[in-house]
Image (tube, rainbow, N blue to C red; front, side, top):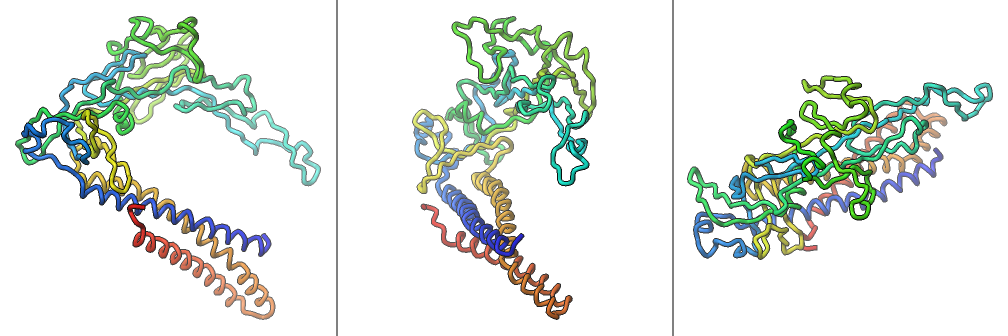
Length: 424
């Protein structure tokens, strides 16, 4: 690469690194300071709150930042249901339906191509050999487009007939604050409500829920389902005409998961493999669906940091700086400080990733900007400069670039963390 082009590239890297670093650090420091601001406003529940008649209604805490830890849910056993398949669970916050489809995956083995004019020097035309493109069937919860496949006729991926979805109690979840001060926990009638959408946003299920014959009731059999077998993005037909409801006979169970039947059966042509001690069915019919469920038990408890509206529904709390604060954690009780510092730690993963990327840009930017110096050293070497001295000089250039990038990044970080105003 010409010296001028390399120098220009170094300048571009420097110019891009500065705003990226500044925006990244500013977002981190503002978030950290705002979380500290929130700690000064947190209202912790105590025995007086839970026993006082004056504070017995959720509306009395309107415009306060509340910290709630609880394992008390007055609606238990709470029922969550997938209306399409009739899957019902109790004692869980959410029910997640994960749909995977067996789809073709194309592998382009370019090395298996031959030159169309191999005897002509410089030719770039390639003639696909019979084994250049290979295809395999893979389970995927994402739609894999086959529009660009070399062989679209025999290796075409259909659209998803059923979508992945997360189900929550339609009316949300009522919770009772749990005052943790030793073994005696006062029980209160004070209740707050976590909206259904917030349950879906904050709680991500991980525990696999195995389906059994007595827990599945398909639509079209008992009339409880509303979903249809239609491709993603299709419009329902008028007045429900021509819609094909889900039917129990279209699916079958295997190892706690639901599989679509294909002709003659998804399992009749299947091979069974073993992964992590679990038996997994792998039918060889593209378009076959595999449906599994995951849940999160209510026994784990909740920690919430949020505001509350006049109806008692937990909502984001607006800090004086304008930041909206709303956190929900599943698991053992966490203090407000622990919740906020965990959020800072999660932010630091992104922060340090971008820091590393910024350092790389600054380092290579410095290195490329010193290319004229390296050219000068090479020219001087040709005029009699010691080869050893030239090599030492190149090491010095690399070292200078490394130290320079570290210093620039440190200065930017230091200035922002000292001077950023949380109210900005």
